[in-house]
Length: 367
Image 1 (tube, rainbow, N blue to C red):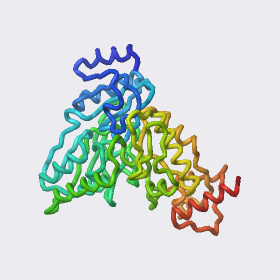
Image 2: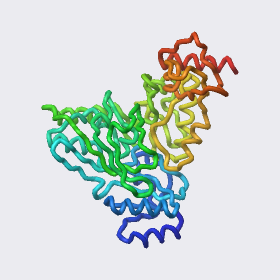
Image 3: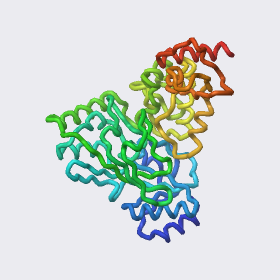
Image 4: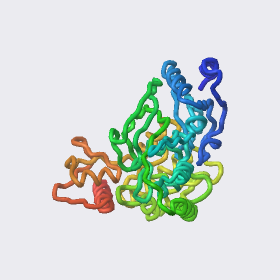
């Protein structure tokens, strides 16, 4: 964000905390990337609504940041404002009879512990997931067969114009690592409806945190990098493709869990992009499965660059059929024309692994 618009923004919001030249490593768990030119930290809905409205009116691009546990920072300074929702009202929890209100900036681990203290449970399977409520809802985070949306009642926030916005759980389409929340909507809080806590709720929380610490890599990481391909574990696919220990610069695929990419200290955004691309390419060549990332990029064009490096094939298949569903799970695009390959009508692909093997062999034969 250049100095002129930044000075004007500070003048318009004299009470707003605006930090300049903040390194991405200070606000993300992966600690990759360069410097944020401007980061605003509003503390309540009124200031946030005005800030969103101001940015839209003055055509200032912005990105919403929470805990930064799922984000790769940018090497170069993109011309945008980072709005971080972790302070003030965005970090509060309110208990109202059988409804619990959590700000978008509340850590999931803290939320689960606070709910257990008030005799609410159900969140123990999720406590090992890093991140805050807003980001976890947008990606419908989950673990052990439980998703955060399972206990949701309503989401509240603003649209890009600073106008109030809300959606009940049933108004949103939920699927694996996806929620049909409008892309421009900013989540500020969520209302949950939780069951009563189990008698050993605190013990369940403690055990899950210990299990995560024992099985997941430490150091600088962003949690799982890639989505599972349907029933196939991304970590297993990456491991079988021989990617453990693969490195670009200071970015390396963990030897402990293949679906973790760790920053050994000085990894850049470009290192991460190149390593992710190599992993996707190797898994595609070995399994015929095209992994999709869970992590996000601060720079808006980087995800497109990732997909362009190893594009998934366009497949002609019967829409709505089993083959089409499984092909989508392994990263393919289902099309009605201009397809790279056509699924033979007599072929029944009942698993992601079998589907990937057919796709891999079909691509090799075509070459």
